[in-house]
Image (tube, rainbow, N blue to C red; front, side):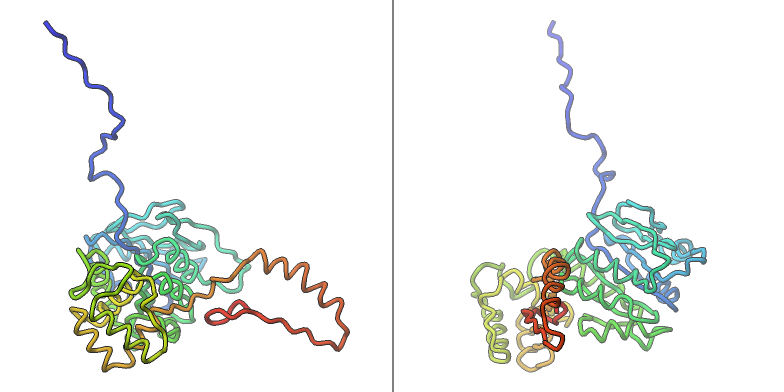
Length: 339
């Protein structure tokens, strides 16, 4: 009689597939302040609950106020709503709410908290979170600015735009307080401005685009040479208007940016969008701006500027005559923040 061998132990985890942690298809950062609760309620009443998205709510909260935001939002969605704890993983089909007296970032798909500095005169929690969202999620980042006073969010959304993500704003006339929406729109980087009711549809449209089975109708797969007739026509339109030849631009970036404009213009194919560009100079300019993102960090070198501040400039100023002018030339980049 032959003895049967027991199966060898396996290193493969036996955890069921459905239990393995999934990453969200995109992370939606919602910034709100005064009047934001009503906008958030409308947004989540209409938001998809099973689209694989994660929603992170950053709202201005009084340090003395016991926030019930997680409980309130739970009445308007069937998704799980969590008050964030430090180190919490971001999972799809969930809503995460910042707790009072905290600042928050996202890093490697985890939400990290720190105590808000009570001595800081200016708190910009939305900007802080959106900057981290852009860095962590890149073109899978979606920024949504809702009702509120002030300008929080208008700096952070710039980085979401630079990373190739989507920037949405509540239409100011529908917001209880239009300060934050108008400040966002003033950046010139907002993709769509819509009533809170319609914002979830725009989010879903963008995510469906991200997860599409292939390029939009009329595109060939991106490669190092542009052989597609419509893409070549677009390049020629841009060259004629702005004197820049995008044939030497990175093919995947060019195609992704054109597809993004297709999505935002509700065009169904590249041919109709090419026709639009030939007649619509405003949209041609929008595409041009999308292609030449004004990134202001390329030549920033923190250590070099610290050395200048601590060693070079003091020595230079100490040696000058009292009436002598000191001139410093700074190589320009984008919008000039380096200077």
